[in-house]
Amino acid sequence: MAVGGGGGAIPLGSVEALAADWMLEFACYCLCRHFGEERPAEFQRWRDVAQALLTGLSRISTQQRKKVYVCQLLMSVAEGKELEWHFKNEERISPLESALSFWTLLEREEMKLDKLHEDIRRLLQIQAVAVHMEKGYFKEAADILERLFTDSESDKPLRVKLATILKSKDPYVPFLQNFSYNHLISKIKSYIELFMKENENNFLLQAATQEVESKGLGAIELQNPPVNVKKSPSSSLETKQRPHSQKHQVNHVLGSLNSLQNVENNGDALARGRKRQRWTNSEDLELKSGVRKFGVGNWAKILVHGNFKNRTSVMLKDRWRTLCRTDQS
Image (cartoon, one colour):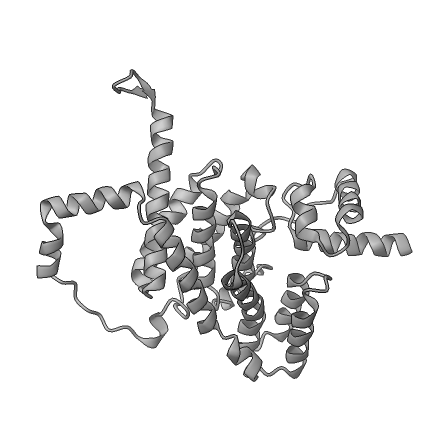
């Protein structure tokens, strides 16, 4: 099917794809805005819109990557403390681990990394462990610590520090208070503020702004301000609890994006909900070749340059340990 245009018929699919890109861009902007302003109801509404758009993607174009990763980062961080549902359904990857995976992908889209990027990565690592300790899930916190950190020397100081804290089983030590969940939220707000400035000229935002101004709709809204509903302490983005059905929608989106080829080849995001699959001989050879080329511990680099399907850097690390044990026996 085609639609008319000045230069002749245009395939409807091309029109839909462009419109969907505009909608995703606008939904991402709205998510960032409501996350930054701590408006949980509005954030949830636009999260549902973003999920629907992401589910409909058959692939992620180069210009869409950053928007997709930002949306998934914010949705994962907003669920960062929702652990009960996670354990009840035996999900292995926690929300903040998922957020860290998307942050890794976001870092690869940046022209250069600065201290803000480093701070957010460190806070995600720390809080992925800390939120479990706060609820008394010490075994799960230990498992996460094992999954998050590679064997590289750069990771060692923080890994050792968190391991020592975990042994004490005290989630309120000064170190964790200095790198609190609220601190994480604050840093992410700083990042998305910069992101919004880069994307404030998106097409739908400009078009809607012009329409509102031309029809005087902004003045009408000012005359009829929305009712100010007093928020309870539990309604913030950091602590808001959501129905299980909404959590299932997040998993559905993650599962859909898992199938996208350009995500499969670029990092350890979207591991959540993935079924366990047997390692093939060709993958083992690819892993061994990557270790010879880049060295043990550089799992993210090996993943990006290797020919792996539906694997994460954590999976590469675990498989390498298995191969080492097999060779020794």
